[in-house]
Length: 362
Image 1 (tube, one colour):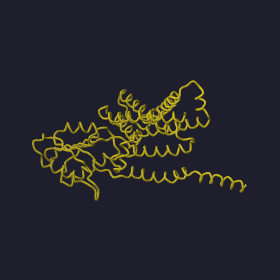
Image 2 (spheres, helix red, strand yellow):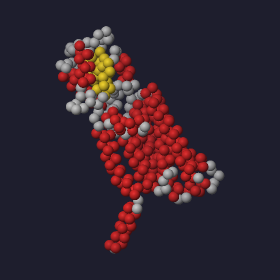
Image 3 (cartoon, rainbow, N blue to C red):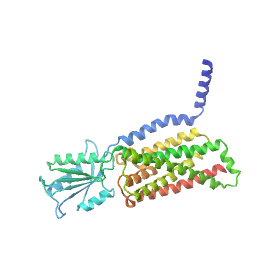
Image 4 (cartoon, rainbow, N blue to C red):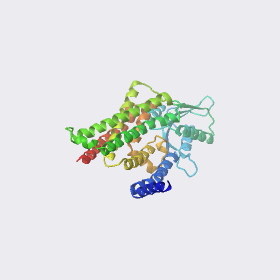
C-alpha cells in the first residue's frame, strides 16, 4: 500500500515540477494578493473634497467662515497629507448641486456668527464607506479647536447606508466576472478538449457565427447571474429601488459590462489549451480588477499607483455607475463617463475576442 501511495506521490510531484507556469503562479499569486489587497484596503483616506459656504451672501467673509476654512484646509493627522480639499462656495445652492453630482462629498454651511440660535449644518454624501464618518469627525474636531461650540446638524443626503449595501452593489460585478470565467471561458476550453469546436467547423456554420454565439450565450449567463445578485441586494441587503427607470438603467449597465467582460474572457480562453492554466490566469485577473474596482473600499483611500489601475479598470466604472444609480439615484449627468468608458471597453473586447478566437480556428 505504501509503495502504491509513494508512486502516486512521486508522479504528482514530477508533474508539478514540469510545469514552471504553475510554479510561477503558485508563488506570485499570494505575493500579488498581499500587495494589492493590503494597499487597496489599508490606505489612508485624505484629500476628501468638501465645500464650505455661509448663510449670508458673499459680500464679505465672516470671521467664522474665514477661520473655519483655514482650519479645515490645514487639518491633518501627524505625518499625513491634509484630510480635506476645501472649496469655497458663494452660495448654498451651488454647493449642494456639486454635492448631488459627486464633485464634493460634503457641504458645511456656517451661520453669520456663533450663537445658540444659529446651528451649523453639514450635508453628507452618505453613499461611501467610512468617508462620511471621517468628514463628520474631522469637521467637528476643527470646530472645537477653533472655539466654535454651536449645535451641529447632520443630514445624510442618501439616508443611512450600511456596508452590506455598499459592498452588495460591487458584488454584482464580481458575480458577472465569475460567471463569465466559469460558464464562458471554461466552457469554451472544455468544448475544445472534447472536440465539439472541431465539430462546428465541419458544419455550414460560419466561424464568426461560432464566436458570436459563444459571446452571446456567455453574456446571457452572466446577465442572469448579475440580476440574481441584484435581487439579493434588494430583498436581503435592503438596497433601495427608487423607480422603474432606475431598474432599467441598472439592467443596461449590467448588460454592457456582461458583454465586455465575457468578450475579454473569451479572448483569454482562446489562447489556452487546458482549463488549469486558464483558471490560474483569469483568477489573477479577477483579483486585480475586483480589488481595484472600489467594491471593497473607497478608491480615494488607495495609493496613487493603485488609482492609476482604476482608471483603466472597466469594473471600477461599472461599480461607480451601479452605485450612482442604486445608492444615489443619479442619472446620466453623473454616470455618462462611466457608460462611455464601458462602451469603449465592450467594443474593444468584442473585437479582440472575435479576432483572437478566429485565429484559433484557422
